[in-house]
Image (cartoon, rainbow, N blue to C red; front, top):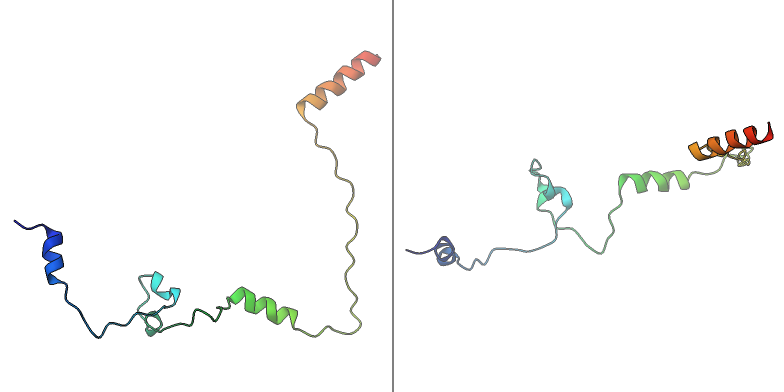
Length: 98
């Protein structure tokens, strides 16, 4: 009795019409069944994402006249968060002074 692998190997035949080429990541989602799934892509050409397109359009906008740059004001000093030990030390210091 032959194993499944041996049977499968017997059925493998060379095929001349197979083409190998990189494809889009569209093929990664099984519900996609469009021509984009088999369309060759150029790996040397970087793909621009929607967010990078948005950022580039924002950066390339001409600056409006009369609009000054927004100054970043210094933030107020942060209050030190009280921990249980700091509360206890404060209480002990008060009782020592009394």
